[in-house]
Length: 193
Image (cartoon, rainbow, N blue to C red; front, side):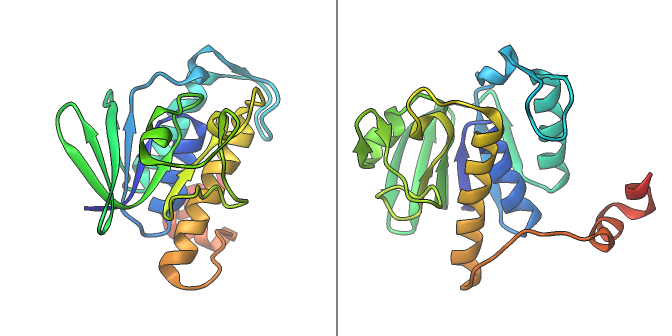
């Protein structure tokens, strides 16, 4: 069993995995690699002047991997159900059980429908932390916005979901804020170079 099962490997899913894994939670990402980022070029992502979407994804994947998330590339979630302990995500090969679920499947909302999440029109209804009407299940990015899709917004949604999970797990409001000494501890002296 993992702490957080994340369905989708675009900016929202990978950011949720990054924040969760970086802060000590077991995170499993099921990624079909069908994200729209492969068709994108970033000019408007803060901190990035100009970068191909696929190159951006590789950088984010490397970060997620460095913090120990279980990133399963080429794996599609076929069903999701609630269990007594959280959630079960089925794939063609196996099932992943988790305490929390982050749905980051772009505009594909079928898993949210199957789970019984409330909708507001055509989009999944979430609160400010990206939590759906199903406790412990989060929806991000294009799933929660009608035609307002943006990589940096999706990444923010993934961060909000992960920080809410971390707050629930730690029993207090949690924030992810690092200082230079944290980078030195994690990456060594090369962090400043």
